[in-house]
Image: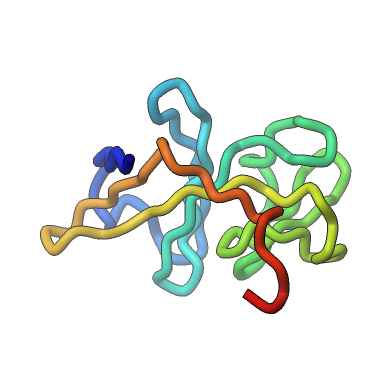
Length: 117
């Protein structure tokens, strides 16, 4: 069941930026990729360290600890797209009033998807 939580106004998340926020005790990175918002759990799947302080390069967030890079729109590892340890993403939307909402109750499990889906 979806549980959409308001996390602020769309203009709080500037294009090309990333910001760490806490939503219901979860640390989440909100990224703005060319006007499209993405939400990623603030945990690098490689070593379980926070990824949120990493550099956002387009749609790629690079972990500051070991350089693992993840596409924030898909969760996939940018260097090893078939890797079984994708980043966890969350559904995110912008309301007509310009508020950003995240569905923290429904993380995406990218391991279930294939390149054909």
